[in-house]
Image (tube, rainbow, N blue to C red; front, top):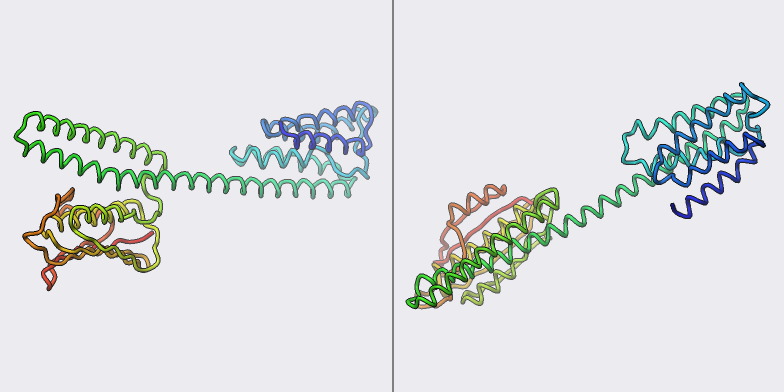
Length: 355
């Protein structure tokens, strides 16, 4: 119960004596105002109690007029608790079925119409009840929109966290696993080989746990990476490539637009694979990554110059074959074009739709 609920009871009780009641009739109406204290917990029950009183009073006025009379024609509103009960049914029972929410309000409105010889009181009462219903619907829609916005904000944040885990952490751990595997194969020392194999196994376990965590984050969104989000941050790939001996320039043109999660992850994979191939097949080359936004599409271009056979890089890093990459791009609704350049370099270009 909140203080505003007690205020509603006091207002309904204060309007009751103005209805011209005394004795048992006054007690019945005051008892009908008291359930407003539970308007938030049981809004439909309160609405039905109010509608029942509105129906019972005219019936009792016909059966026992000496005990219960009709409300006075100059009463401000009938029944006094009616508008509050109608408002509660609209706001606090918004998750119920429409029929169960509207039925007690309709019964209440028809019960007021039984006072046919008091046209002014009927008109005032119906108008106030209608206003209470309209305001209740407004508050209900406002609260629902606020809840949906808050839920979407939470989904977007979980989506961002899952994307960072998938695109950044997995990339770095995969490099650790690959290098540990190479060390285990190349080392002639048994102890070093065992240590490298242990590092590789631990990295694989970390990747499995990371995939499980990302799956939980996806499940929490309820949409599974389908929200419109910006492209993943490609700076980590640029920094890693520079540390491995291949300088990379990153350029973004156009106004960034949100893309589907699958598109974002695939675009990240395209840049990651293209830079890994540069380190592997064109050591000593310079690379440029261009992200160009256009209406309803985004173009990813990775272009490198010719390499130098005598250049040295620390490793090629993770990557995948171009046919597999083309299949992944097609799955994301994009196209992939690869080919050599006239200056001896190579270019990988992917075009994806934006959401």
